Image 1 (cartoon, one colour):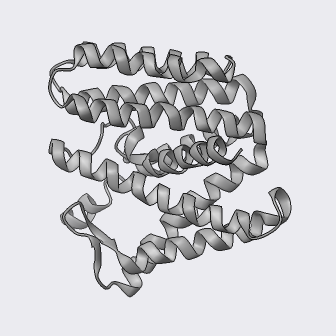
Image 2 (cartoon, rainbow, N blue to C red):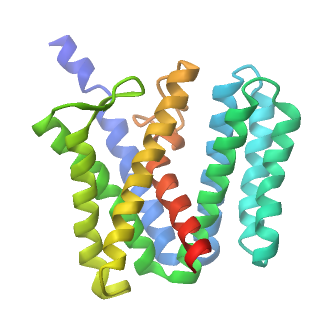
Length: 258
C-alpha cells in the first residue's frame, strides 16, 4: 500500500502545475504582444539558469546572472530590427563564455539554441499570428503523445538506447504520422497544400531531436531533472525541450526560405 501511495505522491502537485502552465501559456498565446514576449523571455532566462546550474552546480550566482541577462536579451530582441537580433541574443552567450571554464562547449551550444528558439516563438506569434502558433504547439504535443502511447503499445527496437532508453522506433515514427495529420488539419487555416504537412513532419523530428539533446545533456551531467522549478515536472528545460527544437527549426526554415 505504501509503495502505491509513493508512486502517486506527486500526482497532485503535477496536476496543479500543469493547470497553471496551461492557463498561463494559453492566456499569453491568446494575448500575444508584450504579454507573450515577456513570458517567453522569462522562460528562456529560466532555462539558461537551469543550464548553468547543471554545468556548474557551485556557481549559483553566475547562473542567476546569466539567466537574467538572457531574459533581458530575448525581450530586447523582440523590439529590434532583424539586423540587431543575432548580436543581442549572442551577448549572453559571450558573457557566459567569459565566466564558464569547464564544459564551455555545452553552454555555447545549448544557450544559443534556447535563445534562438525563444526568439523564434516571439517572431512566429508576432509576425505569423495565433493560428501558426497553435499549429506549432499542436505538432509538438501530438508528436509527444502519439510517441508515448505508440511506444508503450507497440514497443520494438529502441531509438537510441544509450541516450534515451525508453524511446522506440515505433513511437518515433508514430509521432511523425501524428504531426502530419495535425498539419493536414491546420492546412485549411494557415496554408493549403502539401507544404504544411511536410513542414509539420520536419518540426516533429526537430522536437524529438530537442528532447534527445536535453536527455543527453542530463545524462552527461548525471542529473534526473534540469531543476525542481516546476513541482512534479522537473524544470523548464524538461517541459519545453521539444518546443525549443521545433521553434528553432521553424526559425531556420523561415530565414532560409522566407
